[in-house]
Amino acid sequence: MEILIFGAGSLGSLVGGLCAREHSVTLVGRDPHIAAVRESGLAVEGVVEFTTHPEARTTVPERADLAFVTVKSFDTPAAGRALADCSPSMTCSLQNGLGNEESLAAQLDTVLAGTCTYGARRPAPGRVECTGIGEIALGAPDGGPSAAAERAVEALQSAGIDAVHDDGMPKRLWRKLAVNAGINPTTALAGVENGALADDPLHDVASEAAREVARVAQVQGVELAESEAVAALESVVEATARNTSSMAQDVGAGTKTEIDAINGAVVDRADGRVPVNRTLAALIRARERGYAD
Ligand code: KPL
Image 1 (cartoon, protein in one colour):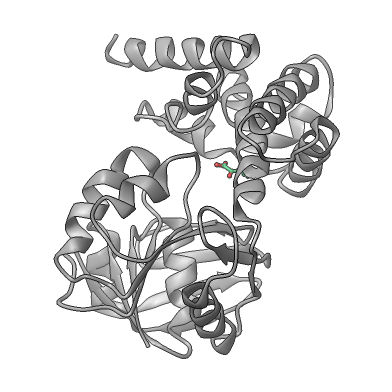
Image 2 (cartoon, protein in one colour; image 1 turned 180 degrees about the vertical axis):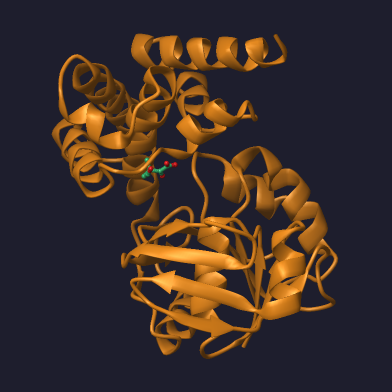
């Protein structure tokens, strides 16, 4: 199968590297990483170790059977426009936040929702470290069976990736949103690793944000209990205790965050009943406005 990875950051490079053990893979991203992969291949390190030689480009190729979108959520509309040029048979979002699938579906046919719990880090151009084996779940964005998701899961499994087809993706996406809404802004504002959220008072703030997400999900018809959202948050805090969340990395580097697709998306769908998410979104946006100073 021709697999295209749009966004060769840490997660995209890891998924692309693992897929390249079985499929023809094209990584689309930015130099200097792409130039390094073109020159010497992609070194996958950590829990699994091998070097592979996917095609590496800064623009999309002519065709693809399956595309994974792994860019930041604010770049999703541009990803959809770029991918429209090679019209993949199916496109799957493996991103943070809500709204990515709708945005891709405005440009592309057969869009799938996905989540990934593999851990990845990109220590240097041309290298990606697998920090933990996890699972990729794919399915129709609105739930229900999907023949396309079955085909995509088979392609991942044939490359040795733990992958499942989930016909309940809306709940999985809201549960992931609860985790990100709790962990990402609190770690970014406090400047701490994820594990710091195990203790009060940060635990209180993060778990209340997750509870609010569960309440909004319920209003949207998704049966996510508050206790399940908090349990998911606590298990990710424990499993990723030594990680710096993506938002903490963005704030540390002074780059744009995914606040709009995470806490901002909760506020937009909530009609004013989410004071913790509203406060966290306002504080992160204030930090972003202050970057230039
Ligand atoms: O998805 C993540 C992120 O940092 O964006 C978590 C799960 C919080 C891991 O750090």
